[in-house]
Amino acid sequence: LGGPAATWFDPILKDHRDNQTTPDKREEQTKVIFEKYENFEEQLQKTFGTVNEEQEAENQLRVIRQKGALAKHTVNFIQLLTKVDWTEATKKDVYYQSLKPKVKDELYRVNRQKTSWTDYTQQAIDIDNRIWEREQERKHEKNGNQQNFHHSPRNGNRNTANQGRRRDDYVASSNDTRPGRMDLSSIICYNCKEPGHKSFKCPKKNNKDKKDSWKPAEENKKATKEVGAIVKDEHASFH
Image (tube, rainbow, N blue to C red; front, side):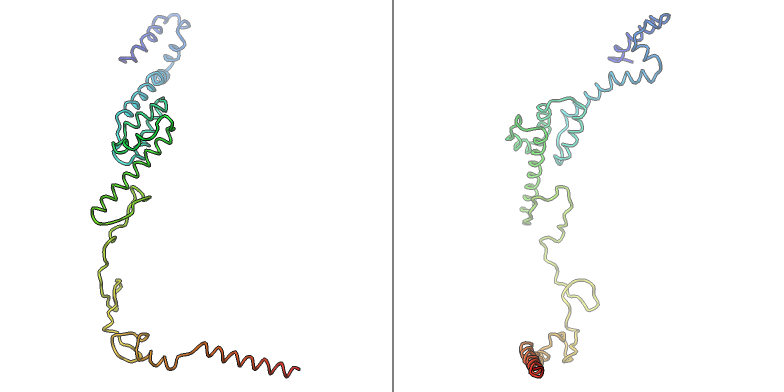
């Protein structure tokens, strides 16, 4: 052992040696530590482990800086906070110093003293998201692509490969599975036997249909009259 650990252990070791012939006079801590090695490790961890862990966490909290999305940075920050005993004021002060300058510029407007730690971090994350959205808008405005990035996932995948592009005017053949205009030059109308159109668009068929077309309104009137006549006849015969 060395340093603070040695300073802590020296009087315990002295107590153990001085009372070798009178073990009952040893301090209780000395008895426990020398009972078995596991007890010594446990006491050493309790005395120095927590202190070292807390100091290390505090050092990290004061030097870490936001590099990407603030939401992720905040999660890391809060995890380190579980190892220190800070007031809300200290948390907010150190957290503020860890942010990007653009976020600081906006978060500075928030009244830190009247805002809880939870609300403070949430407002900071909202600011960071708005800044990111605006930066994405600027990039696409510069490229001539007006896309709305509001309420879009910051790290999500966007399928923008075909956005703003005109689909090629591809002409599909009769046995092709790709999308596109159909080549009508090889189509033969089975109504007039002429190429270049389908039967439902056949001009000759349309002329014929106009002459022989079914008129539902007139047919309905005729059927109604016939039914009415039948009902009258049956009524008359009944009486």
